[in-house]
Amino acid sequence: MGSWLEGGPSGGGGRGTALGLPAQGSGSAATIGRRAVALVLDWTLCLLLASAFFAGDATGPFWQRADGMVTLAIFAVENLVLVGTLGFTVGHRVLGIRVRRAGVTPDGPLPDDGRAPGFGRAALRTFLLCLVIPAVVWDSDGRGLHDRAAGTAIVRR
Image 1 (cartoon, rainbow, N blue to C red):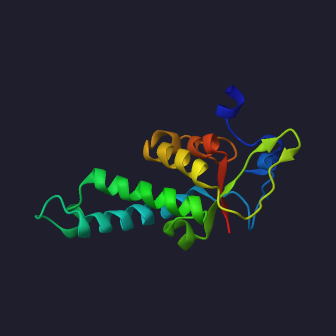
Image 2 (image 1 turned 60 degrees about the horizontal axis):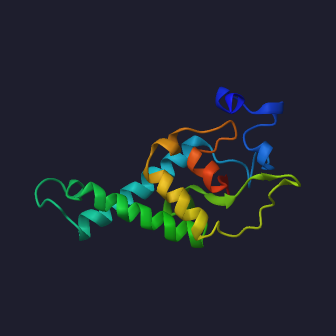
């Protein structure tokens, strides 16, 4: 556990190489910048939907009318449905990244079969993502605790 928390990737192969991901290009671990911008796009979309259909306050600018919990609920549903079925959210798609199953078995890294992670993994990942803290703590492979617990990774398309 200590070596996991302490830092950089072992062996100098780069982020995600322990998971069998390439060091760069398609299938490599997505950068924190791409993931952050995708998150902002997804949250903005959910905020606009909540403001348009579930306005809690009729005063103030349009984007401030939404109830925070409604926005979070829309965000959770978006993540659960889209990641569970397609492997990406709207923000992920725009930024050219996707969620895939990832992990290491005794036989080696899991191969990328190109399929969506499924509802079970998406549900766990979404729940932990909505708690925020697991998403902002990540390992040397660049995976947040939410991805690590769900057995997923965000990679470039």
